[in-house]
Structure formats: structure tokens, C-alpha cells
Image 1 (cartoon, helix red, strand yellow):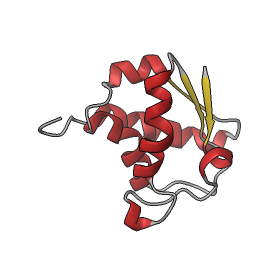
Image 2 (cartoon, rainbow, N blue to C red):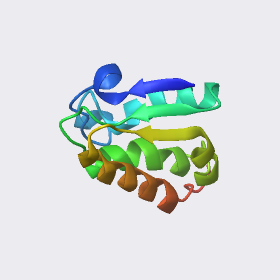
Image 3 (cartoon, helix red, strand yellow):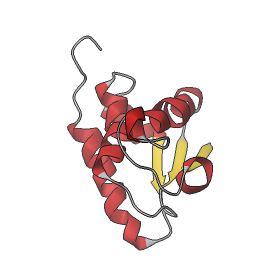
Image 4 (cartoon, rainbow, N blue to C red):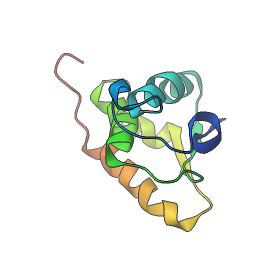
Length: 110
């Protein structure tokens, strides 16, 4: 199992949806970290705590974008993706990520 610690492996200040929003945006995290790990491994653990916080645009793009772009279905992600945290304040982010995944619809042409 591959583990990605967002705070240590990516940034403790993830922000924004697109590259124009800054270096540590959701698109970059999805394409350079999350998608390759999920494609190459049976199971991926993503540790979501340790950051200053998340904006909804980052989370929706990084995680919901996996479904919107047609890379995975929500059911596939339920099998492959494990969202972990030690700080109980981050439970709300875990729940939000799963909401974005479950509500995402593949874009036309994907």
C-alpha cells in the first residue's frame, strides 16, 4: 500500500483548484501525486491532517476530479482509497472528500 501524507509530501498549505491559483493546487496534487499512486497500487492511504486547512476548491478538484475526468468511478475509489487522520478535526474533511467523489459526474467526452 502506498501512503501519501499531504502535509509532508505535498504542502501544509494546499490551496486552489488550478495552476493559476498557486503552486500547491488541487489539479497538480491529483495529476502528480494522487492519480499515479491510485493507478499503480491496489490501495492508497492519504493522510489528510497536518495541513493548515483545505478550501473546497482544492478538495473537489483533487478528489472529485478523479471521477469528473473519468479516471475512476466512486466505487473504484471506495476500494482503492483510504483517507486517514489522527486529528479528529479532520473528520469533516474526510466526509467532504467522499461527498465530492460521490457527487462527481464524468465530464462529456471522458
